[in-house]
Image (cartoon, rainbow, N blue to C red; front, side, top):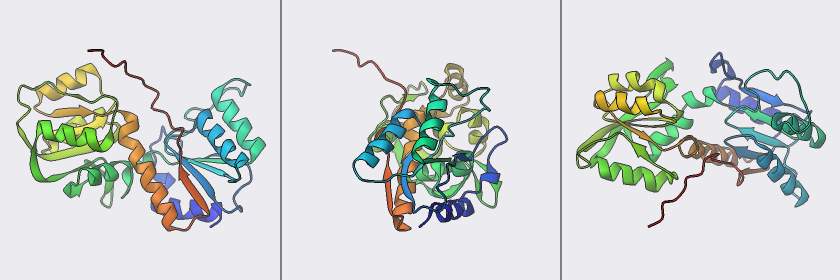
Length: 270
């Protein structure tokens, strides 16, 4: 499958036209690789570490020619491109080594098997629907019912075991044994959807990047807010994309081993 065919297939599934006005989905760098057979490195965030991984794979005999990322390389138009700047270096290396960089962000968030949908599947939610519908059953986040009710404690244990976040934060509560049957999920920064989640009847909301007062708001509105981190809540959808590309018989595809969480947590000593 050529790169142009891969991108056509993807955009029929997750149209870049569905992105938010502030977003920058689609080609970040296209150095002339459209007619090459696709050899794809999938990542959450296109960083210099991922680019170096692609170059190392080339040196080892795998001619990677496309970095397919969830987060855009370029959010705002750069005013200059200078050596030493991370984005500039990515662009320079992409053109020097003929490696395309393509991003699917808020368009990928909305679709079946996108960031939110994969989280709902990981928790095995049933009767699933978007938290906010954008068009014909697509939309941001997912809400659904657990197969069988879980105590909050066991729900947190399930999330920890399936997503393995380095840190799991949740709203203050005196009752970890309260039963949870309806859960909302949204990968990445989803705290702005708290009011929409409340309208769905969800008792718990799994997302990321929540602030101090958003935990207060959720506690005061009887919603258990669970923050598993940006990386842990979105990386599973990248893995699912790899599986889909493997099913399409792409020449070569792999999930990046150099994706970064960008956060470290100091482990407490006993």
